[in-house]
Length: 110
Ligand code: AMP
Image (tube, rainbow, N blue to C red):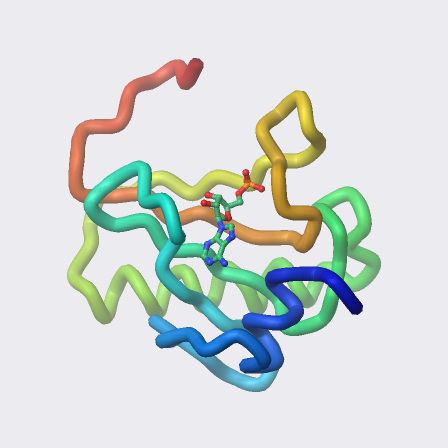
């Protein structure tokens, strides 16, 4: 989608160093990491949020990538987050899963 920053990353219009990539998914480090490990896993196809996913295969592809990333990095304890909507903290309206790890993570979140 034009003007979507994550579409530009997915299309390599904005240079990025992928943590993981296949034909459906790309993962890269968050620009403003909130933990020693802070990776974003996104579908290459533009979908604004989890509410807008029509084919749930997309979620399988994303979580398949999450599993591969944590396995490859030997991360045993981590949090996955999907913010949906402004009030929940979504600031980029292209679906993404945050992977956070490398420090104790508070629960419940703020
Ligand atoms: P959210 O607030 O859940 O929508 O998460 C969006 C995330 O994208 C934030 O953690 C931002 O720091 C991150 N972000 C925004 N632009 C970029 C970018 N160009 N490269 C990497 N991460 C980004």
